[in-house]
Length: 235
Image 1 (cartoon, helix red, strand yellow):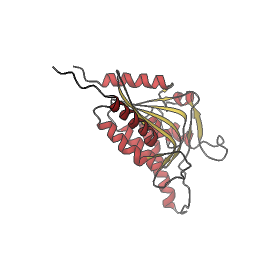
Image 2: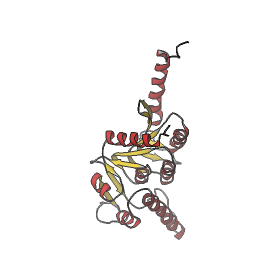
Image 3: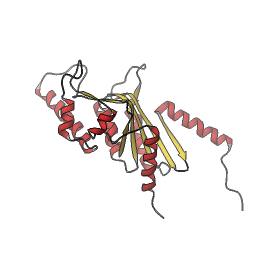
Image 4: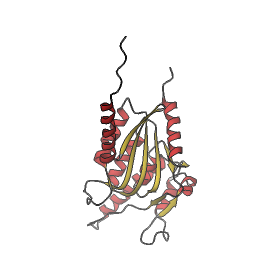
C-alpha cells in the first residue's frame, strides 16, 4: 500500500503565508492543535460602520467580520471561536450586527476583554457563550451618542431610546446582569467628567454579572477547549 501524502515544505510555507495574511488583513488566525482547531478573531480600535474612518485610525470593519463569522460557523475544520477584545466602541448598528451573529452561533465561543471593551464593545463581550476579562481591563457603559448633525425633533429622541433599549435587552439576555442595574450604570452621573455613564473594571464586571470570569489567555483557551470537548459527538 502506498504511504498517505505528507504535506510538502511548499504546502507548509503556503499555509504559513496564508495565516500571516489573515492576521494582517482581518486580525484573525486559525490555530490547529491535537485538542482541536480554534479560530481567533481580534476586535480592536473602533468598530467601523457605513462611514470610512481615517487611514490612521485602528478599526475593525464589520463587512470583513460578518462573512468571516459565517465561515467559521459553517466550517467542518473549526471547532471553536476565541474573540479578543480591545475596542473603544464605534458604530452601534455594526457592533450589534457582529454581536448578534456571535450570539447566534452554535459552535463554542469565548470572549476575552483585554485593555478595554467600551461602549458597543460591551454587547460584543457578552455575545460569546463564555466571557472573560483581564483584571486591569475596563468597560465604559454610557447612553447612545451620535456625532454630526442631529435634527432636534421628537422622532430623533425616540430613535435613540429604541436603539438604547435594544442594547440593554441584548446585554441582559446574554449575561447575568439585569436590565435595571445595567440601565442605572448607563445613566449614572458624576463618574465621567464629560459624559453620563460608568466605567467598571475586571472584578466589578464579574461581580455585576456582566462578565463570567476574571482571567487571561490561558483561562479563556482552557474554557474553550473544555466546551469543544463537550460539543464533540460521542462515538
